[in-house]
Length: 318
Length: 212
Image (cartoon, rainbow over all chains, first blue to last red; front, side, top):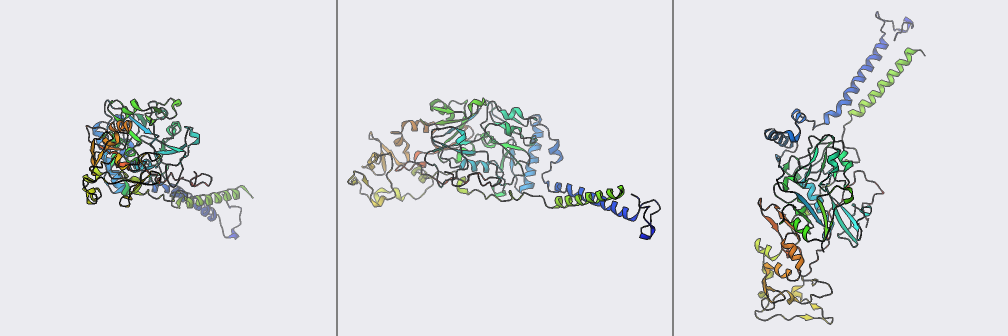
C-alpha cells in the first residue's frame, strides 16, 4: 500500500516509514468497523438471560446425583424460578414407587372434544403460552373410522360434540418400548420403573431426535424461551416434571409426576367434565383401570402396529 | 487500476458490509413479527374442575338454599298430586315446575313423575319395586335401572373422580349421578369447546375456522 509514485504536489507526502495519510485512514476505518461488527455480532448474548450458571453447567447426570447434591440442585432451581418470576416454588424430586405401574384409559364413547384437558395440562405443567406448547392434541374423527388420515385437530364449532364425529385426545402414550428413549444420544430421556418416560431438561441438548422418533407427535421443543404469565405459574414443581424449561430443550407429557407420584390424579383427568379419563395403577386389582381392563369390551392402543406398546389405552363403553 | 487500488476498494466494501451487519445485529433481537402476536390466556371457565350442576347432596353439604326442595310448602301432605296428560298421552308439566324438561329416555318412555318420585311422600324417591330412597341417596335409584353403569360407577370407572388415586395418600373425590346428569334430562348438554391450537405462522390454507 504505497503511494510513493504520487507527486508531492498532491499534498500527500510519503511519511518516513512509507505509510501515507490516506492508507492510514483507510486501514484504521477498516479496523474500527471490524471491531464494531464483532462487538455487535456478539450483542445478542446480552439478551441471553438464561445463560447457564456455572453450577448448572457442571451439574452431574441425574442418575448420578447423590441425595445431598440433588437437594442443592432443587434449591438452585427454586432460586432460579424466584429470580425469574418473583415467586418461590416448591421443587421436589419424587421417585417412582415400587410395585406401581401407571396406566391411562380414555373412554372414547364419553369424550366430547371440549379441550378442557389441553388447557388444564398447560396450566398444571407450566407450558409456554406464547408460543403455545400443548401436550394434548384432541383430534376429531368421523364416526365409524379410526383412520388418522381423517383426523382434524383444528376443529372449532360453536358447540361440541358435533353430529357424526367422535374425539380422541392424543398425548404421550408412555410406551413400554419407547422409540424416543432409544434415539436420545445423551440419555436425557428414559423410562422410569412406574412407566413414566421423563426428560431431564438440564441434560437435554435439544437435538430433537426424540421428536422425530415419536410416532404420536407427543414431544414438544422450546424454540424460544417459554413465556408463562406469573399469575398462572404452578408453584408445585418437580425436577422431572413441570419446572420451567429453558429455550432449546424438549418436553412432553409426564403423567403429571408432581401430582401422580404424590398419589394424586393428573390434571387432565380432574378437569374432564364427562369423566372420560381414567388413571391408576394397573398392578392394583382394585384400581379403576384394572376394573376397565376386566369389564370393558374394546381396547385400542394407538398405532399398535408400531410395536411401541403404549400404556395409554382407548376404550369404548359397551 | 493497479493492485493496490483494487485491494483498497475490496477493503472499503468489506468494511461497509461489516458495518451493515453490525447495524443489523445491534438492532434489538426479539421474537419475529409472526410470533410477537401474543396469544391471549385461556378463559378460566375452561380450567374449572367443578361439575356442571349441583346435586341435592352437594347443596346440603355446602349449606345452600334448599327452599326448592320444600315440596310441602305448596303441595298438601297425604294427597298425591294429579298428573295431567295431553291428547298424545304426553305429560303436561305444570308451570310451577317449568324448569323441569322431561327428557329421560327416548320416545317419551319415562312419561310419569312417579316413576322416580314417591307420590306418597314427595320429599322421597321410589324404586320400581317400591323401596323408598332419600333424595341425597339417589344413585341407588338410578342403579335400579342402569345396572352396568352403576357397577362401573361403584368401581370408579364411570363418572368424574378427583383427589387421590392412591387411597393411602389421601381421599378420592367422587361424584354422584346427579352431580353431572340432570335427572329429568340426563344427556350432558353440548358445550362450547376451548380454543384450539394457535398456529405459529398463520397460513391461509390451513382450516382453522368453519371446518365442520
